[in-house]
Amino acid sequence: MKTTILAGLIGMMGVAAAGTAAAQQAPQGESPWMVRVRALNLDWANKSEAGSGSLNPTNLPADSINAANKLIPEVDISYFLTKNIAMELILTVPQKHDTKISQGPLAQSLGSFKQLPPTLTLQYHFIPDGKFRPYVGAGINYTRISGVDLKTSTGTVLTLDDSSVGGAMQAGVDIPINKNLSFNFDVKKIYISTDVKIGGEKVSNLKLDPLAIGVGLGWRF
Image 1 (cartoon, helix red, strand yellow):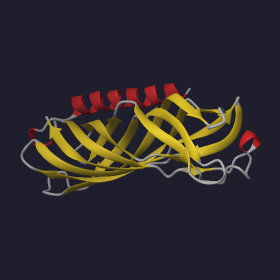
Image 2: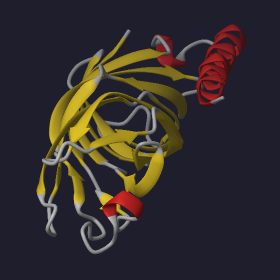
Image 3: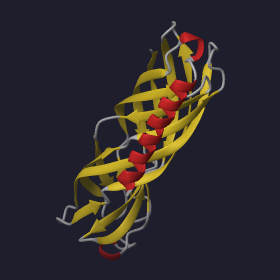
Protein backbone atom coordinates (compact mmCIF):
# COMPACT_ATOMS: atom_id res chain seq x y z
CA MET A 1 0.00 0.00 0.00
CA LYS A 2 2.82 2.39 0.84
CA THR A 3 4.41 1.72 -2.54
CA THR A 4 1.07 2.40 -4.20
CA ILE A 5 0.81 5.76 -2.41
CA LEU A 6 4.23 6.83 -3.68
CA ALA A 7 3.54 5.60 -7.21
CA GLY A 8 0.29 7.54 -7.22
CA LEU A 9 1.99 10.74 -6.13
CA ILE A 10 4.67 10.40 -8.81
CA GLY A 11 1.93 9.72 -11.35
CA MET A 12 0.11 12.86 -10.23
CA MET A 13 3.31 14.84 -10.73
CA GLY A 14 3.55 13.56 -14.30
CA VAL A 15 -0.08 14.32 -15.10
CA ALA A 16 0.11 17.81 -13.60
CA ALA A 17 3.33 18.55 -15.45
CA ALA A 18 1.92 17.40 -18.79
CA GLY A 19 -1.26 19.39 -18.32
CA THR A 20 0.54 22.57 -17.35
CA ALA A 21 3.04 22.26 -20.17
CA ALA A 22 0.19 22.04 -22.63
CA ALA A 23 -1.59 25.01 -21.08
CA GLN A 24 1.23 27.57 -20.85
CA GLN A 25 4.72 28.43 -21.92
CA ALA A 26 7.64 28.29 -19.50
CA PRO A 27 8.27 31.71 -17.93
CA GLN A 28 10.51 34.02 -19.95
CA GLY A 29 11.48 31.25 -22.34
CA GLU A 30 12.93 29.07 -19.55
CA SER A 31 12.39 25.36 -19.51
CA PRO A 32 10.13 24.22 -16.66
CA TRP A 33 12.69 21.55 -15.73
CA MET A 34 15.41 22.02 -13.11
CA VAL A 35 17.92 19.51 -11.75
CA ARG A 36 19.90 20.08 -8.57
CA VAL A 37 22.84 18.14 -7.14
CA ARG A 38 23.51 18.57 -3.42
CA ALA A 39 25.77 17.36 -0.65
CA LEU A 40 23.32 16.56 2.13
CA ASN A 41 24.00 16.09 5.84
CA LEU A 42 21.48 13.84 7.62
CA ASP A 43 21.22 14.74 11.31
CA TRP A 44 18.98 12.09 12.90
CA ALA A 45 16.58 12.93 15.72
CA ASN A 46 17.12 9.42 17.21
CA LYS A 47 14.04 9.44 19.45
CA SER A 48 13.32 5.91 20.68
CA GLU A 49 11.02 4.34 23.22
CA ALA A 50 12.41 2.66 26.33
CA GLY A 51 12.74 -1.05 25.69
CA SER A 52 9.99 -3.54 26.37
CA GLY A 53 9.82 -7.31 26.32
CA SER A 54 13.24 -8.70 25.43
CA LEU A 55 14.75 -5.20 25.81
CA ASN A 56 12.96 -4.09 28.96
CA PRO A 57 13.01 -0.46 30.19
CA THR A 58 15.69 -1.21 32.81
CA ASN A 59 18.17 -2.32 30.15
CA LEU A 60 17.24 0.05 27.32
CA PRO A 61 16.57 3.70 28.27
CA ALA A 62 14.52 6.02 26.05
CA ASP A 63 16.39 7.71 23.18
CA SER A 64 19.31 5.29 23.42
CA ILE A 65 19.12 3.71 19.93
CA ASN A 66 21.21 5.97 17.70
CA ALA A 67 21.84 5.93 13.94
CA ALA A 68 25.00 7.81 12.98
CA ASN A 69 24.72 11.13 11.14
CA LYS A 70 26.02 11.01 7.59
CA LEU A 71 26.92 13.20 4.59
CA ILE A 72 25.29 11.80 1.44
CA PRO A 73 24.81 12.80 -2.23
CA GLU A 74 21.38 13.92 -3.41
CA VAL A 75 19.85 14.60 -6.82
CA ASP A 76 16.45 16.21 -7.24
CA ILE A 77 14.30 16.90 -10.27
CA SER A 78 11.89 19.85 -10.24
CA TYR A 79 9.08 20.76 -12.61
CA PHE A 80 7.71 24.32 -12.48
CA LEU A 81 3.95 24.21 -12.90
CA THR A 82 3.91 28.03 -12.90
CA LYS A 83 6.55 30.68 -12.22
CA ASN A 84 5.91 30.31 -8.49
CA ILE A 85 4.85 26.69 -8.01
CA ALA A 86 7.05 23.65 -8.56
CA MET A 87 7.04 19.97 -7.73
CA GLU A 88 10.31 18.38 -6.65
CA LEU A 89 11.27 14.70 -6.51
CA ILE A 90 14.26 14.17 -4.21
CA LEU A 91 16.42 11.11 -4.88
CA THR A 92 19.57 9.38 -3.67
CA VAL A 93 20.95 5.84 -3.57
CA PRO A 94 20.51 3.43 -0.62
CA GLN A 95 22.58 4.74 2.29
CA LYS A 96 24.20 2.61 4.99
CA HIS A 97 24.00 3.88 8.58
CA ASP A 98 25.97 2.58 11.55
CA THR A 99 23.76 2.10 14.62
CA LYS A 100 24.41 1.69 18.34
CA ILE A 101 22.83 1.69 21.77
CA SER A 102 24.37 4.81 23.28
CA GLN A 103 23.52 4.50 26.98
CA GLY A 104 22.50 2.10 29.74
CA PRO A 105 23.91 -1.34 30.56
CA LEU A 106 23.30 -2.47 26.94
CA ALA A 107 25.47 0.33 25.43
CA GLN A 108 27.24 -1.19 22.41
CA SER A 109 27.54 -1.12 18.64
CA LEU A 110 24.62 -2.90 16.95
CA GLY A 111 25.66 -2.92 13.29
CA SER A 112 23.98 -1.11 10.43
CA PHE A 113 20.99 -0.76 8.13
CA LYS A 114 20.34 0.86 4.75
CA GLN A 115 17.61 3.34 3.85
CA LEU A 116 16.40 4.80 0.56
CA PRO A 117 14.20 7.90 1.14
CA PRO A 118 12.62 9.32 -2.05
CA THR A 119 10.62 12.43 -1.16
CA LEU A 120 8.09 14.41 -3.21
CA THR A 121 7.34 18.04 -2.30
CA LEU A 122 5.18 20.84 -3.64
CA GLN A 123 7.05 24.16 -3.46
CA TYR A 124 6.18 27.85 -3.55
CA HIS A 125 8.90 30.13 -4.97
CA PHE A 126 8.43 33.68 -3.69
CA ILE A 127 10.63 35.67 -6.12
CA PRO A 128 11.20 33.45 -9.17
CA ASP A 129 12.93 36.19 -11.18
CA GLY A 130 14.98 37.69 -8.35
CA LYS A 131 18.68 37.58 -7.58
CA PHE A 132 17.74 35.77 -4.35
CA ARG A 133 14.99 33.17 -4.84
CA PRO A 134 13.62 31.70 -1.58
CA TYR A 135 11.07 28.89 -1.50
CA VAL A 136 9.18 26.68 0.92
CA GLY A 137 7.71 23.25 0.37
CA ALA A 138 5.82 20.37 1.93
CA GLY A 139 5.17 16.83 0.84
CA ILE A 140 5.52 13.13 1.54
CA ASN A 141 8.41 10.76 2.10
CA TYR A 142 8.57 7.02 1.45
CA THR A 143 11.59 5.33 2.99
CA ARG A 144 12.62 1.80 2.06
CA ILE A 145 14.68 0.10 4.80
CA SER A 146 16.91 -2.81 3.79
CA GLY A 147 20.21 -4.50 4.59
CA VAL A 148 19.36 -4.65 8.29
CA ASP A 149 22.31 -6.17 10.17
CA LEU A 150 21.70 -5.38 13.84
CA LYS A 151 22.84 -7.70 16.61
CA THR A 152 23.68 -7.29 20.30
CA SER A 153 26.94 -8.56 21.78
CA THR A 154 25.02 -11.55 23.13
CA GLY A 155 23.89 -12.51 19.62
CA THR A 156 20.31 -11.21 19.82
CA VAL A 157 19.17 -10.15 16.33
CA LEU A 158 17.12 -6.96 15.95
CA THR A 159 14.96 -6.24 12.91
CA LEU A 160 13.28 -3.09 11.57
CA ASP A 161 10.13 -2.44 9.54
CA ASP A 162 10.91 -2.57 5.83
CA SER A 163 9.36 0.82 5.04
CA SER A 164 8.07 4.10 6.44
CA VAL A 165 5.72 6.78 5.11
CA GLY A 166 5.72 10.27 6.61
CA GLY A 167 5.56 13.97 5.92
CA ALA A 168 8.32 16.32 4.81
CA MET A 169 8.84 20.08 5.14
CA GLN A 170 11.34 22.16 3.21
CA ALA A 171 12.79 25.66 2.90
CA GLY A 172 15.62 26.88 0.73
CA VAL A 173 16.99 29.45 -1.67
CA ASP A 174 18.40 29.49 -5.20
CA ILE A 175 21.00 32.18 -6.00
CA PRO A 176 21.58 32.54 -9.79
CA ILE A 177 25.16 32.34 -11.01
CA ASN A 178 24.28 32.74 -14.68
CA LYS A 179 21.24 32.20 -16.91
CA ASN A 180 21.03 28.47 -16.24
CA LEU A 181 23.21 27.74 -13.21
CA SER A 182 22.41 28.59 -9.58
CA PHE A 183 23.75 27.95 -6.10
CA ASN A 184 21.29 26.21 -3.79
CA PHE A 185 20.92 25.98 -0.02
CA ASP A 186 18.14 23.74 1.27
CA VAL A 187 16.84 22.49 4.64
CA LYS A 188 14.34 19.65 5.01
CA LYS A 189 12.68 17.98 7.97
CA ILE A 190 11.71 14.43 7.02
CA TYR A 191 9.57 12.19 9.23
CA ILE A 192 10.77 8.56 9.30
CA SER A 193 9.95 5.98 11.96
CA THR A 194 10.30 2.23 12.36
CA ASP A 195 9.53 -0.41 14.96
CA VAL A 196 12.48 -2.29 16.43
CA LYS A 197 11.72 -6.00 16.87
CA ILE A 198 13.23 -9.16 18.28
CA GLY A 199 11.77 -12.40 16.91
CA GLY A 200 8.81 -10.46 15.53
CA GLU A 201 8.06 -8.85 18.91
CA LYS A 202 8.14 -5.05 19.04
CA VAL A 203 10.62 -3.92 21.71
CA SER A 204 10.92 -0.22 20.79
CA ASN A 205 10.01 2.41 18.20
CA LEU A 206 12.71 4.53 16.61
CA LYS A 207 11.85 7.96 15.18
CA LEU A 208 14.72 8.88 12.87
CA ASP A 209 13.11 12.16 11.67
CA PRO A 210 16.29 13.64 10.14
CA LEU A 211 17.06 17.31 9.65
CA ALA A 212 18.61 17.30 6.18
CA ILE A 213 20.81 20.30 5.35
CA GLY A 214 22.09 20.50 1.78
CA VAL A 215 24.20 22.74 -0.44
CA GLY A 216 24.72 22.32 -4.15
CA LEU A 217 24.11 23.54 -7.68
CA GLY A 218 20.97 23.70 -9.79
CA TRP A 219 20.69 23.66 -13.58
CA ARG A 220 17.61 25.11 -15.32
CA PHE A 221 17.30 23.68 -18.82
